[in-house]
Amino acid sequence: MKRAVKSDLKSLILSELQEQLRNLGEPSYRAGQITDWLYKKRVDTIDEMTNLPQPLRKRLSETFSLGKIDAIRVLGARDTTMKFLFRLADGNLIESVLIPASPASRDYGSGRSDRRTICVSTQVGCAYGCKFCASGLEGFSRNLSANEIVDQLIAVERATGETIDNIVFMGMGEPLANLENVLQAIRIINAEWGLGIGARHITISTSGLAPQIRKLAEERLQIRLAVSLHGATDEVRNRIMPINRRYNIETLLSACDYYKARKKQRLSFEYILIADVNDSDDQARLLSRHAHRLSAKVNLIPYNSVSGLPWTRPSEKRQEKFLSILRGDGIPVTLRREKGHDIDAACGQLRLQTEREALAGG
Ligand code: SAH
Ligand code: SF4
Image (cartoon, rainbow, N blue to C red; front, top):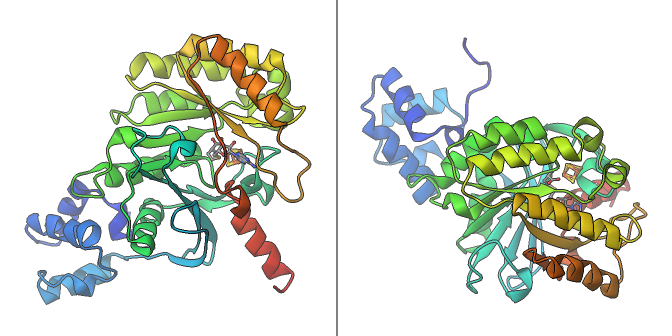
Protein backbone atom coordinates (compact mmCIF):
# COMPACT_ATOMS: atom_id res chain seq x y z
CA MET A 1 0.00 0.00 0.00
CA LYS A 2 1.33 3.41 -0.93
CA ARG A 3 1.23 5.96 1.84
CA ALA A 4 -0.04 9.44 1.14
CA VAL A 5 2.29 10.97 3.71
CA LYS A 6 6.03 10.58 3.23
CA SER A 7 7.73 8.88 6.14
CA ASP A 8 10.33 10.87 7.99
CA LEU A 9 13.96 9.76 7.72
CA LYS A 10 14.26 9.96 11.52
CA SER A 11 11.49 7.45 12.07
CA LEU A 12 13.36 4.59 10.39
CA ILE A 13 15.87 2.26 11.98
CA LEU A 14 19.06 1.40 10.12
CA SER A 15 17.84 -1.91 8.70
CA GLU A 16 14.67 -0.28 7.36
CA LEU A 17 16.72 2.46 5.77
CA GLN A 18 18.98 -0.16 4.17
CA GLU A 19 15.96 -1.88 2.72
CA GLN A 20 14.54 1.39 1.39
CA LEU A 21 17.87 2.16 -0.28
CA ARG A 22 18.01 -1.28 -1.89
CA ASN A 23 14.52 -0.55 -3.24
CA LEU A 24 15.92 2.61 -4.79
CA GLY A 25 18.71 0.54 -6.35
CA GLU A 26 21.37 1.96 -4.04
CA PRO A 27 24.07 0.11 -2.10
CA SER A 28 23.03 -0.39 1.52
CA TYR A 29 26.13 1.30 2.96
CA ARG A 30 24.44 4.56 2.01
CA ALA A 31 22.10 3.96 4.95
CA GLY A 32 25.01 4.24 7.38
CA GLN A 33 26.11 7.46 5.73
CA ILE A 34 22.60 8.84 6.16
CA THR A 35 22.33 7.90 9.86
CA ASP A 36 25.72 9.53 10.33
CA TRP A 37 24.40 12.78 8.91
CA LEU A 38 21.20 12.54 10.94
CA TYR A 39 22.49 11.52 14.38
CA LYS A 40 26.22 12.34 14.49
CA LYS A 41 26.54 15.45 12.34
CA ARG A 42 22.88 16.33 12.85
CA VAL A 43 22.09 18.15 9.65
CA ASP A 44 18.64 19.63 9.03
CA THR A 45 18.36 18.97 5.31
CA ILE A 46 19.02 16.12 2.92
CA ASP A 47 20.93 18.56 0.75
CA GLU A 48 23.64 18.88 3.39
CA MET A 49 24.48 15.15 3.07
CA THR A 50 27.34 15.98 0.77
CA ASN A 51 28.89 12.52 0.44
CA LEU A 52 25.71 11.26 -1.23
CA PRO A 53 25.53 11.71 -5.00
CA GLN A 54 23.28 14.60 -6.02
CA PRO A 55 20.71 12.36 -7.83
CA LEU A 56 20.35 10.25 -4.69
CA ARG A 57 19.79 13.32 -2.55
CA LYS A 58 17.07 14.32 -4.96
CA ARG A 59 15.47 10.87 -4.84
CA LEU A 60 15.60 10.88 -1.05
CA SER A 61 13.94 14.30 -0.88
CA GLU A 62 11.17 13.03 -3.12
CA THR A 63 10.69 9.87 -1.07
CA PHE A 64 11.15 11.03 2.53
CA SER A 65 10.51 14.03 4.68
CA LEU A 66 13.01 15.35 7.20
CA GLY A 67 11.23 17.23 9.96
CA LYS A 68 12.56 19.55 12.61
CA ILE A 69 10.92 20.93 15.70
CA ASP A 70 11.28 24.54 16.80
CA ALA A 71 11.59 25.74 20.37
CA ILE A 72 9.22 28.66 20.74
CA ARG A 73 9.78 29.20 24.47
CA VAL A 74 12.58 28.24 26.81
CA LEU A 75 12.29 28.78 30.54
CA GLY A 76 14.87 28.32 33.27
CA ALA A 77 18.60 28.60 33.48
CA ARG A 78 21.46 26.32 32.53
CA ASP A 79 22.12 25.15 36.08
CA THR A 80 18.46 24.57 36.95
CA THR A 81 15.60 22.80 35.30
CA MET A 82 15.05 24.08 31.78
CA LYS A 83 11.76 23.78 30.05
CA PHE A 84 11.26 23.80 26.28
CA LEU A 85 8.04 24.42 24.44
CA PHE A 86 8.11 23.12 20.87
CA ARG A 87 5.86 23.82 17.94
CA LEU A 88 5.37 20.80 15.68
CA ALA A 89 5.01 20.97 11.91
CA ASP A 90 1.20 20.93 12.23
CA GLY A 91 1.18 23.72 14.81
CA ASN A 92 0.59 21.51 17.86
CA LEU A 93 2.58 22.32 21.00
CA ILE A 94 4.55 19.88 23.15
CA GLU A 95 7.11 20.26 25.87
CA SER A 96 10.33 18.72 27.13
CA VAL A 97 12.17 19.35 30.38
CA LEU A 98 15.92 19.15 30.91
CA ILE A 99 16.87 18.29 34.48
CA PRO A 100 20.48 18.73 35.53
CA ALA A 101 21.78 16.37 38.17
CA SER A 102 22.45 17.38 41.71
CA PRO A 103 21.98 15.58 45.01
CA ALA A 104 18.41 16.93 45.03
CA SER A 105 17.48 15.35 41.75
CA ARG A 106 18.10 11.92 43.26
CA ASP A 107 18.06 8.74 41.15
CA TYR A 108 17.86 8.29 37.34
CA GLY A 109 21.46 7.28 36.95
CA SER A 110 24.56 6.88 38.96
CA GLY A 111 24.36 10.13 40.88
CA ARG A 112 27.42 11.47 39.05
CA SER A 113 27.25 15.20 39.10
CA ASP A 114 27.35 15.60 35.33
CA ARG A 115 24.22 13.61 34.55
CA ARG A 116 21.55 15.33 32.55
CA THR A 117 18.08 13.90 32.18
CA ILE A 118 15.52 14.86 29.58
CA CYS A 119 11.83 14.35 30.15
CA VAL A 120 10.10 13.92 26.79
CA SER A 121 6.50 14.00 25.59
CA THR A 122 4.93 11.13 23.66
CA GLN A 123 1.53 12.55 22.71
CA VAL A 124 -0.15 15.90 22.18
CA GLY A 125 -2.37 16.05 25.26
CA CYS A 126 -3.47 12.88 26.98
CA ALA A 127 -6.66 10.85 26.92
CA TYR A 128 -6.37 9.43 30.42
CA GLY A 129 -7.60 12.46 32.30
CA CYS A 130 -5.94 12.03 35.68
CA LYS A 131 -7.59 14.61 37.90
CA PHE A 132 -4.35 16.23 39.08
CA CYS A 133 -2.52 16.51 35.76
CA ALA A 134 -2.24 19.49 33.41
CA SER A 135 -1.59 17.29 30.37
CA GLY A 136 -4.97 15.63 30.59
CA LEU A 137 -6.93 18.84 31.07
CA GLU A 138 -7.47 19.66 27.42
CA GLY A 139 -7.94 16.10 26.24
CA PHE A 140 -6.05 14.15 23.61
CA SER A 141 -5.07 15.42 20.15
CA ARG A 142 -2.73 12.86 18.62
CA ASN A 143 0.23 10.52 19.03
CA LEU A 144 3.73 11.81 18.38
CA SER A 145 5.62 10.10 15.58
CA ALA A 146 8.95 8.44 16.34
CA ASN A 147 10.88 11.30 14.75
CA GLU A 148 9.03 13.89 16.84
CA ILE A 149 10.14 12.01 19.95
CA VAL A 150 13.75 11.67 18.78
CA ASP A 151 13.80 15.34 17.71
CA GLN A 152 13.09 16.52 21.27
CA LEU A 153 16.49 15.17 22.33
CA ILE A 154 18.29 16.53 19.32
CA ALA A 155 16.71 19.97 19.72
CA VAL A 156 17.50 20.21 23.44
CA GLU A 157 21.10 19.08 22.95
CA ARG A 158 21.48 21.61 20.19
CA ALA A 159 19.93 24.46 22.17
CA THR A 160 22.05 23.83 25.26
CA GLY A 161 25.22 22.48 23.70
CA GLU A 162 25.12 19.70 26.28
CA THR A 163 24.96 15.94 26.04
CA ILE A 164 21.99 14.14 27.53
CA ASP A 165 22.69 10.97 29.52
CA ASN A 166 19.24 9.88 30.65
CA ILE A 167 15.82 9.95 29.14
CA VAL A 168 12.50 9.59 30.93
CA PHE A 169 9.17 9.30 29.12
CA MET A 170 7.36 11.39 31.70
CA GLY A 171 6.32 14.41 29.67
CA MET A 172 2.95 14.96 28.13
CA GLY A 173 1.01 11.86 27.13
CA GLU A 174 0.77 8.19 27.99
CA PRO A 175 3.75 6.38 26.40
CA LEU A 176 2.14 2.94 26.49
CA ALA A 177 -0.84 4.25 24.51
CA ASN A 178 1.63 5.09 21.73
CA LEU A 179 3.78 2.03 22.21
CA GLU A 180 4.83 1.37 18.60
CA ASN A 181 6.16 4.88 17.99
CA VAL A 182 7.74 5.06 21.44
CA LEU A 183 9.55 1.76 20.90
CA GLN A 184 10.72 2.85 17.46
CA ALA A 185 12.04 6.11 18.93
CA ILE A 186 13.80 4.14 21.67
CA ARG A 187 15.46 1.87 19.10
CA ILE A 188 16.87 4.99 17.42
CA ILE A 189 17.84 6.65 20.71
CA ASN A 190 19.48 3.45 21.96
CA ALA A 191 21.36 2.39 18.82
CA GLU A 192 25.08 2.95 18.31
CA TRP A 193 24.32 4.36 14.86
CA GLY A 194 21.68 6.59 16.49
CA LEU A 195 21.93 8.63 19.67
CA GLY A 196 23.71 5.90 21.64
CA ILE A 197 21.94 6.22 25.00
CA GLY A 198 22.04 2.94 26.95
CA ALA A 199 18.75 1.14 27.58
CA ARG A 200 19.34 1.31 31.32
CA HIS A 201 19.27 5.08 31.03
CA ILE A 202 15.82 5.05 29.43
CA THR A 203 12.68 4.99 31.60
CA ILE A 204 9.08 4.67 30.43
CA SER A 205 6.41 5.90 32.81
CA THR A 206 2.84 4.63 32.65
CA SER A 207 -0.37 5.43 34.44
CA GLY A 208 -1.11 1.70 34.46
CA LEU A 209 -2.08 0.24 31.07
CA ALA A 210 -1.86 -3.35 32.25
CA PRO A 211 -2.06 -5.14 28.86
CA GLN A 212 0.66 -2.88 27.41
CA ILE A 213 2.88 -3.54 30.43
CA ARG A 214 2.66 -7.24 29.53
CA LYS A 215 3.48 -6.41 25.94
CA LEU A 216 6.48 -4.35 26.98
CA ALA A 217 7.65 -7.29 29.07
CA GLU A 218 8.11 -9.23 25.82
CA GLU A 219 10.49 -6.61 24.39
CA ARG A 220 14.17 -7.44 24.42
CA LEU A 221 15.26 -3.90 25.29
CA GLN A 222 16.33 -3.59 28.93
CA ILE A 223 14.61 -0.28 29.51
CA ARG A 224 13.27 0.73 32.89
CA LEU A 225 9.61 0.94 33.81
CA ALA A 226 8.05 3.42 36.23
CA VAL A 227 4.45 2.89 37.26
CA SER A 228 2.49 5.97 38.34
CA LEU A 229 0.58 4.51 41.26
CA HIS A 230 -0.50 7.61 43.25
CA GLY A 231 -2.90 5.60 45.38
CA ALA A 232 -2.51 2.32 47.27
CA THR A 233 -6.19 1.33 47.23
CA ASP A 234 -8.80 1.26 44.46
CA GLU A 235 -10.83 3.76 46.41
CA VAL A 236 -8.11 6.40 46.30
CA ARG A 237 -6.93 5.57 42.82
CA ASN A 238 -10.46 5.63 41.37
CA ARG A 239 -10.87 9.09 42.73
CA ILE A 240 -7.90 10.59 40.88
CA MET A 241 -7.09 8.22 38.00
CA PRO A 242 -9.96 7.13 35.71
CA ILE A 243 -7.71 4.38 34.23
CA ASN A 244 -8.13 2.51 37.51
CA ARG A 245 -11.73 1.74 36.63
CA ARG A 246 -10.50 -0.16 33.62
CA TYR A 247 -7.46 -1.79 35.20
CA ASN A 248 -7.72 -1.86 38.97
CA ILE A 249 -4.78 -2.16 41.32
CA GLU A 250 -4.75 -5.95 41.39
CA THR A 251 -4.88 -6.16 37.57
CA LEU A 252 -2.08 -3.60 37.39
CA LEU A 253 0.09 -5.29 40.01
CA SER A 254 -0.29 -8.68 38.42
CA ALA A 255 0.86 -7.22 35.08
CA CYS A 256 3.82 -5.84 37.04
CA ASP A 257 4.47 -9.32 38.52
CA TYR A 258 4.63 -10.63 34.97
CA TYR A 259 6.95 -7.82 33.89
CA LYS A 260 9.22 -8.42 36.84
CA ALA A 261 9.40 -12.15 36.14
CA ARG A 262 10.61 -11.52 32.60
CA LYS A 263 12.97 -8.58 33.14
CA LYS A 264 16.16 -8.01 35.04
CA GLN A 265 15.36 -4.34 35.59
CA ARG A 266 13.82 -3.24 38.81
CA LEU A 267 10.43 -1.53 38.62
CA SER A 268 9.69 1.73 40.32
CA PHE A 269 6.50 3.28 41.61
CA GLU A 270 5.93 6.98 41.19
CA TYR A 271 3.74 8.34 43.94
CA ILE A 272 2.66 11.99 43.94
CA LEU A 273 1.82 13.17 47.43
CA ILE A 274 -1.44 15.13 47.39
CA ALA A 275 -2.71 16.62 50.65
CA ASP A 276 -5.66 14.75 52.17
CA VAL A 277 -6.05 12.54 49.11
CA ASN A 278 -3.37 9.87 49.23
CA ASP A 279 -0.99 10.91 52.01
CA SER A 280 -2.35 9.00 55.02
CA ASP A 281 -0.33 6.55 57.10
CA ASP A 282 -2.63 3.77 55.89
CA GLN A 283 -1.83 4.54 52.27
CA ALA A 284 1.88 4.51 53.12
CA ARG A 285 1.62 1.08 54.74
CA LEU A 286 -0.30 -0.37 51.80
CA LEU A 287 2.06 1.21 49.29
CA SER A 288 4.89 -0.38 51.18
CA ARG A 289 3.21 -3.77 50.85
CA HIS A 290 2.81 -3.35 47.06
CA ALA A 291 6.44 -2.26 46.73
CA HIS A 292 7.58 -5.24 48.76
CA ARG A 293 5.60 -7.65 46.56
CA LEU A 294 7.36 -6.32 43.45
CA SER A 295 10.75 -5.48 44.98
CA ALA A 296 10.01 -2.05 43.60
CA LYS A 297 11.63 1.22 44.42
CA VAL A 298 9.33 4.10 45.37
CA ASN A 299 9.74 7.71 44.26
CA LEU A 300 7.64 10.14 46.27
CA ILE A 301 6.91 13.44 44.52
CA PRO A 302 5.28 16.34 46.34
CA TYR A 303 2.43 17.54 44.16
CA ASN A 304 3.11 20.56 41.97
CA SER A 305 0.03 22.73 41.98
CA VAL A 306 -1.62 23.32 38.62
CA SER A 307 -3.55 26.52 38.08
CA GLY A 308 -7.26 25.82 37.99
CA LEU A 309 -6.97 22.56 39.96
CA PRO A 310 -7.81 22.30 43.66
CA TRP A 311 -5.05 19.95 44.80
CA THR A 312 -2.10 20.89 47.00
CA ARG A 313 0.99 19.18 48.40
CA PRO A 314 1.07 17.96 52.01
CA SER A 315 3.13 19.78 54.62
CA GLU A 316 6.79 18.82 54.82
CA LYS A 317 6.11 17.13 58.12
CA ARG A 318 3.45 14.93 56.52
CA GLN A 319 5.76 14.14 53.58
CA GLU A 320 8.52 13.09 55.98
CA LYS A 321 6.14 10.91 57.97
CA PHE A 322 4.95 9.14 54.83
CA LEU A 323 8.57 8.62 53.79
CA SER A 324 9.53 7.25 57.20
CA ILE A 325 6.82 4.57 57.10
CA LEU A 326 8.18 3.18 53.84
CA ARG A 327 11.74 3.51 55.02
CA GLY A 328 10.86 1.73 58.25
CA ASP A 329 9.70 -1.23 56.15
CA GLY A 330 13.03 -1.30 54.31
CA ILE A 331 11.62 -0.10 50.99
CA PRO A 332 14.12 1.81 48.81
CA VAL A 333 12.41 5.16 48.67
CA THR A 334 13.24 8.73 47.69
CA LEU A 335 11.39 11.96 48.31
CA ARG A 336 11.95 14.50 45.56
CA ARG A 337 12.79 17.96 46.73
CA GLU A 338 11.19 19.34 43.60
CA LYS A 339 13.32 21.30 41.22
CA GLY A 340 11.77 23.68 38.80
CA HIS A 341 8.75 24.26 40.99
CA ASP A 342 9.10 27.94 40.15
CA ILE A 343 8.87 27.32 36.41
CA ASP A 344 5.96 24.92 36.55
CA ALA A 345 8.05 21.84 35.90
CA ALA A 346 5.10 19.46 36.04
CA CYS A 347 4.24 18.12 32.65
CA GLY A 348 1.84 19.92 30.41
CA GLN A 349 1.77 23.15 32.32
CA LEU A 350 3.81 25.34 30.02
CA ARG A 351 1.74 24.34 27.03
CA LEU A 352 -1.47 24.96 28.90
CA GLN A 353 -0.28 28.36 30.03
CA THR A 354 0.84 29.33 26.53
CA GLU A 355 -2.44 28.25 24.99
CA ARG A 356 -4.42 30.13 27.61
CA GLU A 357 -2.35 33.26 26.99
CA ALA A 358 -2.94 32.91 23.27
CA LEU A 359 -6.68 32.57 23.89
CA ALA A 360 -6.56 35.66 26.06
CA GLY A 361 -4.75 37.46 23.28
CA GLY A 362 -1.48 37.57 25.29
N1 SAH B 1 1.29 9.29 31.37
C1 SAH B 1 2.43 8.77 32.03
C2 SAH B 1 3.68 9.58 31.82
C3 SAH B 1 3.53 11.07 31.86
S1 SAH B 1 3.05 11.76 33.43
C4 SAH B 1 2.16 8.59 33.50
O1 SAH B 1 1.13 9.05 33.98
O2 SAH B 1 2.97 7.95 34.16
C5 SAH B 1 4.62 11.66 34.26
C6 SAH B 1 4.53 11.78 35.76
O3 SAH B 1 4.23 13.13 36.17
C7 SAH B 1 3.45 10.90 36.33
O4 SAH B 1 3.92 10.17 37.44
C8 SAH B 1 2.43 11.93 36.70
O5 SAH B 1 1.55 11.42 37.60
C9 SAH B 1 3.28 13.08 37.18
N2 SAH B 1 2.55 14.35 37.33
C10 SAH B 1 1.54 14.81 36.57
N3 SAH B 1 1.10 15.98 37.03
C11 SAH B 1 1.85 16.28 38.13
C12 SAH B 1 1.86 17.37 39.06
N4 SAH B 1 1.02 18.37 38.93
N5 SAH B 1 2.77 17.33 40.06
C13 SAH B 1 3.65 16.32 40.16
N6 SAH B 1 3.67 15.27 39.33
C14 SAH B 1 2.78 15.24 38.32
FE1 SF4 C 1 -2.02 11.36 31.14
FE2 SF4 C 1 0.00 10.66 32.76
FE3 SF4 C 1 -1.22 13.06 33.01
FE4 SF4 C 1 -2.51 10.84 33.70
S1 SF4 C 1 -0.64 11.66 34.65
S2 SF4 C 1 -3.36 12.54 32.49
S3 SF4 C 1 -1.78 9.40 32.17
S4 SF4 C 1 -0.01 12.36 31.27
